[in-house]
Image (cartoon, rainbow, N blue to C red):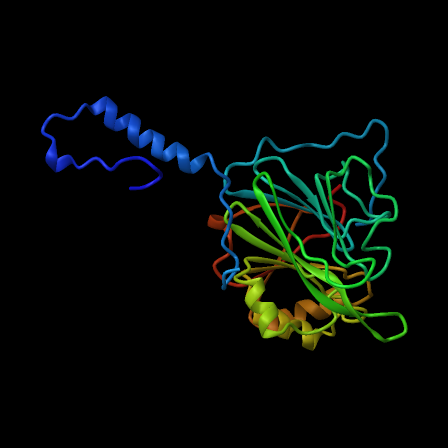
Length: 285
């Protein structure tokens, strides 16, 4: 045993104080549980938003258990993640589709205004831009209480069809022994270096529009290269996009699950055994 506590060599002592042994073991246990448990993701080192009415009531779940993450699909590409420690994260935070309450952390991407905010709520503690507004790289590796957030930048296409280097970020959230990746407005397949930095991912939020991001052939290749246990579709506002993706996912061996609500509480022990597409409809305000 380690953690700065001397190992008790029981074979050298005939008279052991049981109370002392229990106290030492309890101290070791508490030294572990007192620290946030981050998942080790890396393979190498290193419905529409509804403005709440004045009398609206949101039903909050009692505190999450250790090892659980709550996911709400707000709409478009925005999800709200909640950690056991109460940190709330909004992905692709923007000015038209927002969670009920301001998040602790907001990530944004630079494709267009449905993926970033021009007027973010001033109470947000951490605004993480997925692109550098002045040009060049934008690297994040931030720990906020019990979540680690990092990014991998990718390129996007401008409205003129030209490549905009480093205009998008895949954000990775390491929470409660789970690795969750939001692909953002991904426009190309991932390189070997991207995949190595990404690491082993459990849950992927993937844009399935089959139009403004990736065509389905490329998207299915990206998902196969990442190999997540669960894929949660987003960005399916184009007519026919969701059925088309479901068909391709079924052909690829994914199990299709339609959620009854836009909220999911997940842990490593509750991950599906077989690769699963988990479809939530927008509206998780």
